Image (cartoon, rainbow, N blue to C red; front, side):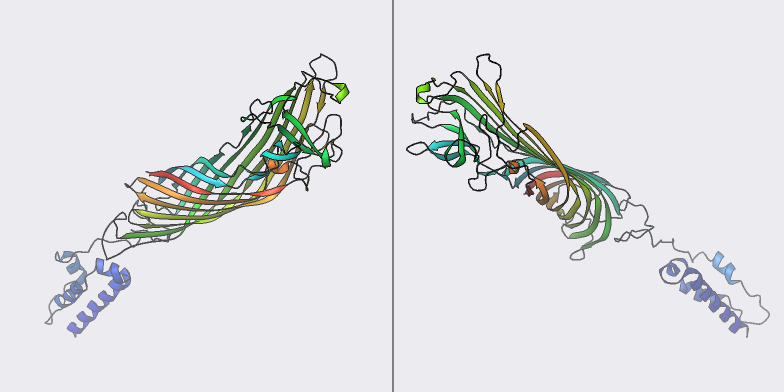
Length: 473
């Protein structure tokens, strides 16, 4: 009876130990099942009247039975950012380092804006046919150079939450024209007059077309310059939140993340703020001196020695402010990586257009009443300023390939694709005649017939390459 009772007590102790430790891995770590069996057998009294040894005393005094150190299930961080992960710098997916900085050179291609003919020459037997010298094409398109910087940090040591910011700046290449001082004679000795074309039904000329001579044989000596430029920049800041992450290896190799058989993948959610700015300008200046000898008998009404000059300047600006959301997926295979980011910013674009059009005639006779007239542009004012706010969106896709030279240094090459809806461009704000395509203008003393200002809205498109490097620490 004592033997049965002793065995029952041993079984109870066994069940108690399992309940206390929860079974499984922790049970194996703290209590050895075989020790319980030995304990139960050695604790029994085989004869009546013999003192029974306490099983607790045996457990505490048996030096051959040692509890294994407790191994916490939270000592490693789950790739899905399980709350409560231990703060261990090895518990994340990807390259080490909580801070990073990336600098890159940009070589982008952008769409331009259509500029009407602003400088022409006269061809044909009677010099009565216009041929465009500068304008009547897209300007500010083609390649542009710039730079981009990106920096950020992980807010926790398991790389689940992060803060990141970037800035990029793209400046277009020159797309200008300069006639130099010319008297309207070409390099081959033949007439090659340089003129400014205008259109207006009340103007003197054939079919409403008028030219303002800049360099004209035996009439004017002058110069015309056209300067166009644009400036594109953007800055943003956003939070990162890991959505999914995993790491694995091929061929069952036991290596670190930089070895060729190791692979990782993580997907992050991005949410933040975006500011983007696009400003461009078209500035046309010309001046000429009248060298013609006045001859009223032949209808010559020139003013010998008079200086004519004009400035026609157009400036358009766009400033976008809005929220930005996106996803970022990163795949690595050993030291190689592919980073794909898809984002979209939605917000308000503040547009403005400024126009300055004026011309001055200086007759050089010190006679009061020098004439100030309008050049290109609508209305009778020489300075006009318009502004408004419009809804706009900026989706963006970036692909970045990288090679990790060391744990802290990576070289990168990438491709960007960006679209911006609802923008205004300076060249697009020059009012033109819908039939001839020539800009509206005025002749001295004749009121302008150009229509009132209307907004001409378009879009901005950019794509191109990036080359740079990344530093982590």
